[in-house]
Image 1 (cartoon, rainbow, N blue to C red):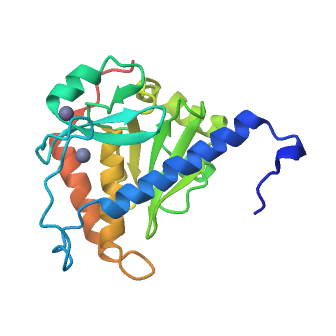
Image 2 (tube, rainbow, N blue to C red):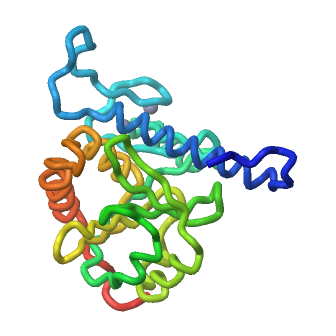
Amino acid sequence: MGRPTADSGVNVDEMSAARRRSETVARMRAMARAAPAGRPPTAGAAPASTERCDICHTTVPDDHRHMLHLVERTIMCTCEACWALYSGNPEYRPTGMRTVWLDDLRCDAETWASFGIPIGLAFFMRSTVTGGMVAFYPSPVGATESELTLEAWTALVDANPVLEHLEADSEALVANRLSAPAQYAIVPIDQCYALVGLIKSRWEGISGGGALEQAVPEFFTALRARAVGAPAGRV
Ligand SMILES: [Zn+2]
Ligand SMILES: [Zn+2]
């Protein structure tokens, strides 16, 4: 599809928002490529690299925290000290802290179809950059993006008020409709990057193979183990 040209009257803000969105996807793809695949390092690669804080470069444990750089739209690995120091900085946003398992989320086939997502696995994020809801779904090449219509998302939120409190940029709703029953959770946004990387690294053949049959169920089992249930009662 052709890109709008500058003289076709396209709103400049829309163009730059579109560019930023494509940059977000590009970064997610880069992160997916960089994600540890559980494979032995290739010959000549550095030995199992210890991760470092992206701010002060101290080494960090595997389960370190992450922050979003809102201007550059990047996810940064951070040590505890930098995380505390930069949490109040307006350019940074800590990734979400909570994992909430949504056992009774209601999303019928019609609502799901309105999202236009070609696979039963996706995550949904409110973006302060675009001002809208963005869905990402995994594929062999990393994350693919789809912008939701306000109507489609509003219908889901109306049926599930718990989603009103999804924190912009730092949390996502993850939906796994490949399982029966379907699984839903609110997760820190870095978990979505982890899932994208996992799927890419385990993708087999045309249909996904082990990535979708094993890696995804394992990911959701682990997610559920550390999740808390949805708050009792409708908010
Ligand atoms: Zn640090
Ligand atoms: Zn990290």
